[in-house]
Structures are given as C-alpha cells and as structure tokens.
Image (tube, rainbow, N blue to C red):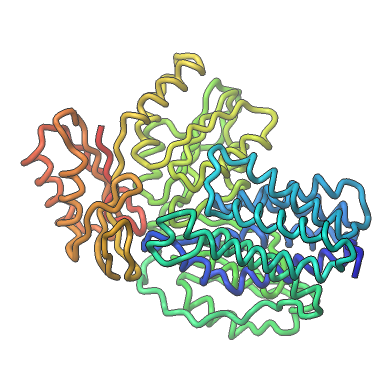
Length: 533
C-alpha cells in the first residue's frame, strides 16, 4: 500500500485505541513511584478513546476531517501530561495533513515528524528519556530510512517505525537514571509504542479488537465513596449484538456499588459509584461510543460531589477554579473563595474538557485556575488556550497546600498582576509532603520499598518508609519543619482515623513552635497531606 486515505486511517486509529486500551494496565505498572495511582496507561487510553469516539461520531471518511476531528477530540479529552503530549503529536499530524485527501508514505512520515516537533514545543522543559524522546527518535529514524529506501510501502514504513520506537523505548532507562534504578522503561513512551503497534497491525490486516473485560476484585468499600461515574453510551452496529445486560451488570457490580443501569434500544445509561472510573469506562466502550461522561468525587451519597454555585448573572472581576479530590478539600477550597472545584487530583486527572466546562460556569473577566498537581498543569494550560472569551491565568500549583496558600493570598480588591505575584510568592513558600502506601516492591533512589509500606514523600522524594502510618507521618514532619516554619497544615484523608490524626497533631504541637491547622480533606489514597509555611 502506498497511499493513506481517510478510511484506512480510521481503521488504524480504531486498532490503536483498542491496542492501547488492552495494554493500559501494563503501561500503568511502569510507574516509577510505587504509589497506588500509576495511571499513565489509563490517561493515554482515555485520551485516545475520546479522540476515536469523536471521529466515529463525525461519520466522515475524509482524511482532513478525520485528522481535524481526532486532534480536537484528543485535545479536549487529554488527561495527564502523557495524554496532553499525545494530543499534541496528533495536532501536529493534523496540521501537516491540511486539505490532502490522500497522503503518500513520505507525507505520512513528515506529518508524524511534525507531530513530534509540536509535542516538544508544548512542553516548557522537555525531558529526554520520555515519550518525547520515543516519538522524536522513532520518527526521525524512520524518515531517514525512508530517504534511503524511497520505495517503501506504508506497511514497511510502519514496521520500521515500530521497530525504532521500541528500540528508543528500551534506551529510556539510559537517559533517566530513575527508570534504570526501578528497572522499568518510560510509561508514556510505552503507551506511544502501543499506538504505533496498533497502526502496524491494522495495516497488516490484523486489526486489534477490544479485549474482554479483565476479572476484577470486588470493591472493599461498601459505602458511597470514590467517584460517581455517569455516562450515556450509544451502541455501535458492530458490537450491539454482543451486549448482554446480565453480564454487563455483574461486571459493573464488581467494579462499584449503588448501580443504576438503564438499557435502551440504542444504548445504555449508567450511574455507579466506583474507586476505578477508568475501568468502568473501558468496560463500557467495547459496545459503542460515549455521548456523555461525568465523573465526580463523592464522600457521601447524600451530599453533592462538586462544591460550586451557579455562575452569577452579572459579570464579576475575578473567579477561581481549583482541582481537588475529597469532600473536605472541595469544601475547604470553596471556603477560600473558589467558585468551582473540579473533582480530581493524583488519582484521577481531569481532562481538558473538564476544566473548560468549569471555566464556562464562572462568569468573570479574570479566572485563576489552580491545577494542584504537576500532572494536571498541561491540561489546564490547554483549557486556557481554547478559551477565547475570558482571561485565564493558570498558576502552576503542584499540590493541594500550594493551591490553598494561593487562594488565601488572593485579594479581590487588587489588580490581576498584583494578585498573580502575591499568589505565586505564596506558592513558592510552601513545602508539601504526603503519606501513602506502596503497591509493589521496588527500589527508588537507593531505598528499598516493599508492598504495603507507608511512604513519607517530601515534594517528589521518598524520604522514609515504615509499616506504621503514624510513624511515617511523624518522620515526614520532622524533615519538613525547621526553625523558620510558622504554620503546618495537616490534611487527613479517608484512610486516616481520628486517633491517627490526633496522634500526628500532638506530635507537631509537642515538638515544633508552629501553629497547626488540622483539616479533614477526605482525599483518597493519601492518608495525610501536609503543608509547611
């Protein structure tokens, strides 16, 4: 085959989406830190799924339309840094396609190279040994091979591209010592290899099909916690006949509780509380495309899961949007002037569209967005870029304590630049720590970690591990506090008991001359989040 058209490309995209989805857990497992939220594969799969769903909805077989629709779908559905970078790769691809109804192998190669260049531009400080390296090295090497062998077919080109991508992926530990020590390759690069492999397999006449749902363990929490996941899914003609209501219901019941399932002739409506919303969506997408998805953090079924007010009728000067997971944290941000709290965080990165939707709810001239997580900043920046009628200021807050400090130092009576400077200064003066548990045995920066250990994490560094949660938290605080410390904010999560929280509070008060602010954040995964100023 020497020409790529819209119909062929659509088949490649479907195969790639299925291949990435089928291997998302393998990619998730490559997370260097052994925290229970390694979600690169899930983020990339949800991002790509949103793109292919938009392509299918368009009903078009024209290459320019498919490339444009895919780019938009990926951009709005992008979750996490890996998802954003993936969206930028295919944004660059779309730009190169232009109005061409067909592309030869050289044009296809150039389009992928353009995607690589745009992805690099999207990252403020590109790091080698990541997905960026894999896309650059593979597309450059394949392009060079094509120059030396100009008669390559599309299938032969993809064979070279996949081979070079896999070779580049295997070299990532040599570029990032943290990967070498953990004995893993880069997770984002691994996800990209799955996309390219999906392309290749489709061109070889072996398109990847959506895999069967993996067997999952029943959710331990029987109360209404985790994420309320709601969606409307339209059956597609290919998979509608294979839908079995009883089997689908049982699978959903294994993933969560408080299930509402309504089966209609053309699709299904689902509402379920689950700790793993990504798994629920992956289970459902085998049968069609999503018309609507809403994921909200819940702590109590009787309470609303997003703390927000309706946008005021009159345009106001300022608005604040924060990202947080946990009923207590959502309320806390609201108390500190946040207009909308987007449900999410380290355990479930919100998409660009989630943040855009929040922006639409705030009727203000200037809106500050606080991502409160390093893996959400790029999605927030994309949301700002696609918003044209409002002034969006993304403060690159990387933690909840940084976001709270920024809110506290916001002054509605000051101008935008003064507020931005004051909030940035406040963020710079915050130390952040957290305590969570390890999900696997590994070694990080010379420290042996065992599954079940509680890890004291200061910034991005694991400084101590213990089998005792309170012990790990005390050690973390002893590293964070010094003679210049004035305020310690202790935020307890859903896995921390009142007794454990009291023990930590007493330790701080007995050993350090600081004011202690204790808050029940109710956040999942992280027993304690600590801010020191």
